[in-house]
Image 1 (tube, rainbow over the protein chains, first blue to last red):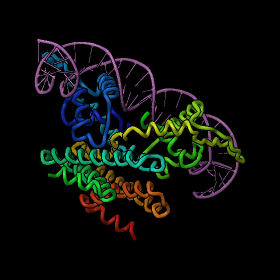
Image 2 (cartoon, rainbow over the protein chains, first blue to last red; image 1 turned 45 degrees about the vertical axis):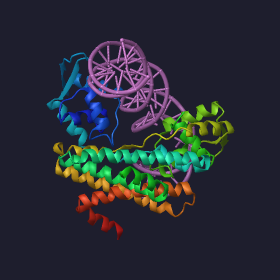
Image 3 (cartoon, chains in turn purple, blue, orange, brown; image 1 turned 60 degrees about the horizontal axis):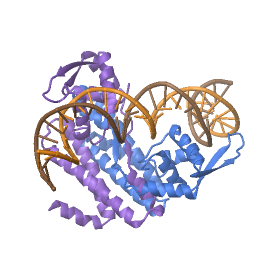
Length: 178
Length: 178
DNA sequence: GCCGTCATATATCGATTTGGCATATGCTTT
DNA sequence: AAAGCATATGCCAAATCGATATATGACGGC
């Protein structure tokens, strides 16, 4: 039960059928990218296993030059299992930040390295914000809009905080906006 | 190299010596709680291993009734290894949210369940904010203040977004503030 | 024209990490 | 008095990550 790679894959497959590769792409760059992670090492075994259990069907699609694509689709049984997994209230959010760990290590790190870390963090945040802005007007589903708005608020708050605390960053932001 | 449980433990041990149990408490409830995680299953083996490698020293402290406490302290060699790990620029933040996944599954979930999930998310955010507010004026180190301010900004942005999108939540917030 | 790198596509494998359990004791809540 | 929680260490199975292997076509640089 609960949330794991299986639930995640089943969830995406309720939108459309997809191969393992496409699922990974969706998790990496698509609507799911800002709040979920999964590697090939967990996706492929999960798909194979769920197919064996009857939660998915497979269809091999030939492709010129490239290896055959294995396109998976969710079954009725898969939907039932997914519904059961989603009936559990979501676990608390988990936020992992090596950057904030470094900020707590001020007594142990050079000023230069701190500045580099802060610049990188700021750049990462702006990159994510740009990524969202770029996709935002192209989506129309309520869920996607809500999630993008949430991610945007949070990332913007973080970027603003950095800019307020480290005035030096304001310049680079102005520069990026040109 | 880079960030893992070892680096994390070494880092905390530059502030003060501590047992595995105390390290876990610090990670769970202390300054590190909002952006890092580690379980006993990773902490204890890491300490044993790093002790064997000479990065830490141990001292057994007797305790009435309870098992002996093994208090670890970082060595010069440990500091060297930590410095090397911290010299790598921090990896990008990772944010895991089952809540946002559920929000993308709107087509698959009942309105009631959605509302429950949103209420829980909102409550979790307010709880974290309260936790920070409560500790905030008691800290004086620059690093801690910076990190708490960062966490506060981000969590507040998320809570505000939920309240703006789901007006129903404003009432519960007003109620909590009484 | 050749070379490096990237994108497509599936898959495995070692290492790390999680989350639950076992063990032991005393204190507090029901 | 029973149940649960806090202290304290530690193990173990299962999940997951990150890197690598394999194969091919496209695209740009030298």
